[in-house]
Image 1 (tube, one colour):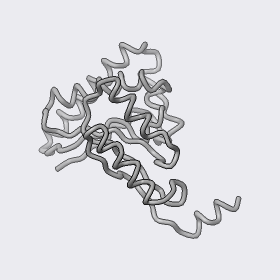
Image 2 (tube, rainbow, N blue to C red):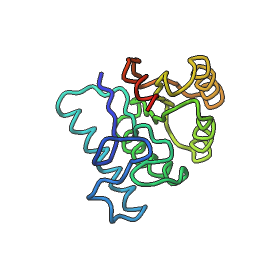
Image 3 (tube, rainbow, N blue to C red):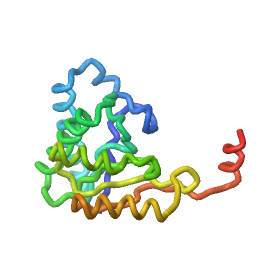
Length: 173
């Protein structure tokens, strides 16, 4: 089963630097929503035609109030909804994930609340968890449990890393 991530930008998706793809820079919000829908549908169709069995699609990557150059979480939810609708139109059984980074900031409950207020149709609240920067596993578990219980969502930690001596060296700089 294929699990795909649609990051929708031209460069490495660093949380606070998620700019729009160059082709979409000039688009207003409504046009951008249409482009996200069309691109998402195209990706799904292309994978499917190549024989892929799509089980989950993640729209965005470590989005933390940055997605396609947008920084307003309510507008981000509107953009997410376009990708989500393309996925539902493709196959209602495909799980939809939205992915954030750093559960230790205290923002996750707010992200989940805003997505709920916007009636966002998604299934999985995903997180990155880097132990050196993102607090304890107890906090990670508590934060994700609260979202799962409050909003009836699956929760996963999507990305992590292991510590090595270069992390310790970086912390001393």
